[in-house]
Length: 231
Ligand SMILES: NC(=O)c1ccc[n+]([C@@H]2O[C@H](COP(=O)([O-])OP(=O)(O)OC[C@H]3O[C@@H](n4cnc5c(N)ncnc54)[C@H](OP(=O)(O)O)[C@@H]3O)[C@@H](O)[C@H]2O)c1
Image (cartoon, rainbow, N blue to C red; front, top):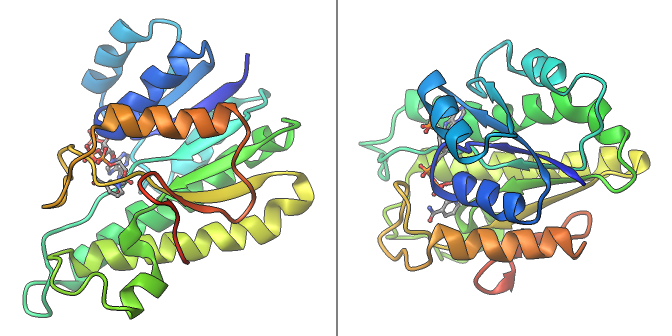
């Protein structure tokens, strides 16, 4: 069966993605940040391989590389993400922006670097970066986020992640690896925006169907509510 690596699998969308791919009998490689989260996940997915690592850690890339070893990996879903509450110039801080950039952009970079050799061993490799509508420069330029209360840190972190997605899409095309971004919808999770309405289960069902049925192309920016988004 195909092998999949999912970051941020402890809760929210990541946990539901693990459930969805477990349902398809895929082999799970899950990433969490604590031994408690690992123990809890093992109760539900006893056959899963689980790595404990913070995606911001300087050791993260090498941990991922060691975790996958000589195996091939077919799909990597970079789901771990975070933001903050600073939505105005007065309330936003450089620390918030730096932290969101580290998680949403550098964390994805390190994970993909760590998984690159394993991805090259698959004959149908795919990297999906869980982005957000708030990472879209085109939507931001049209005023779509104005007054939304979304933080500087989250929008900047996800916009940086989107540029990384496109850099990787250019670079890894020659290795036969597709790289795409997905806005999962406005989800009823801990991170929920004011207008959240979709369950993480539903979003995971839609995302997993697209992946299993090989419907995702290199450079796609898909939206689980409207089909696709402008970069
Ligand atoms: N909720 C929405 O409406 C929405 C909309 C658009 C995009 N998204 C994106 O969807 C993804 C999942 O979000 P969610 O709604 O499921 O949020 P969530 O419930 O807050 O879950 C976030 C996950 O990311 C993990 N994580 C955060 N920082 C990490 C780090 N530095 N290293 C490793 N893991 C880390 C968390 O682990 P811990 O349990 O250890 O904290 C948790 O598993 C995120 O990328 C988010 O930006 C969500």
